[in-house]
Each structure stands twice: as structure tokens, then as C-alpha cells.
Length: 153
Image (cartoon, rainbow, N blue to C red; front, top):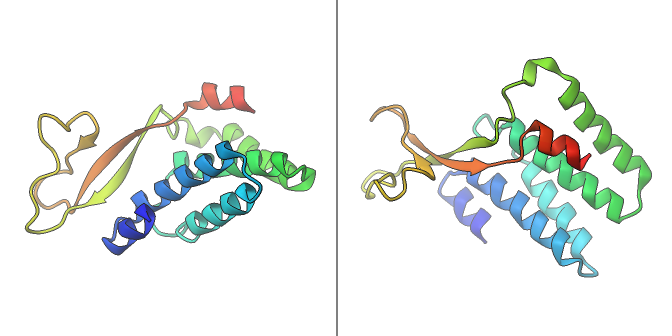
């Protein structure tokens, strides 16, 4: 529901993040149809993978981690190995050193006529864009850094 609302308002980054969180919630719930719902969420998030706004190394790693957890729950060693290989390639790629710094910025589209989203009360979780010409503000999302993610693997 939240992802659909975000998509409707043009907030693709928020929609992808909603799908990731929904997948994590289904994975945690461990209901009989939970893994099917997790895979549906991953597929919905993957639909935006080529969208420039939605592309974030941190979100890509989270998607791969959820995919890994799902394949382990399904007892699917081939899928688990594939997810593990993608994660290992990411961690071994030296050009991504700053990609997982503990937080990532998810763009939130500014809408004309709406009150400002950034105030003294929200400044720690929402960062203002680069001036009035920037059409986005940014949601600050804390993500595991490289060391924490390596511990999960």
C-alpha cells in the first residue's frame, strides 16, 4: 500500500525501500505463504533496478541479502549460492569502498504547493536538496555497513 502511494507520487526510491521492508517483514513473520510474498516484494523492487533514482548500492545489497535469506529458508542451495556470489563480488570490488557507509539517502520528490518537509524537527531524518533548483529532498536511512554485513555472511 505504501509502495503504491510512493509510486503514484513519483517517489521511486521510497517505493523500492517499501518493498524491501515489506519483504523483511514477511521473512520475519515466517507464515506458510511468507516466502512467496517475500519473492513478490523482491520482484516488485527489482522492477525499478534500472531507474536512476532507485539505484543505490546499499539497497541493492539489502535486496541480495533478503534474497539470500529467502533461498536459505527455501532450502535452495543453487539460489543461495548465486546470491552469495553476488554479495561476495560486491564486497571484493574495491571501487565500492564508500558505497556502504552506514547510511544512504533516498530521494523524496518535492511537490509544488506543499509545505516544506525539512524543518528543525525533521532535519536528522530528512535532508534538504541542493537549493531551490533541486527537485528532491532526501530521507536518511541507516543501513548496515560493510563490517556488519560481512558478519551476516
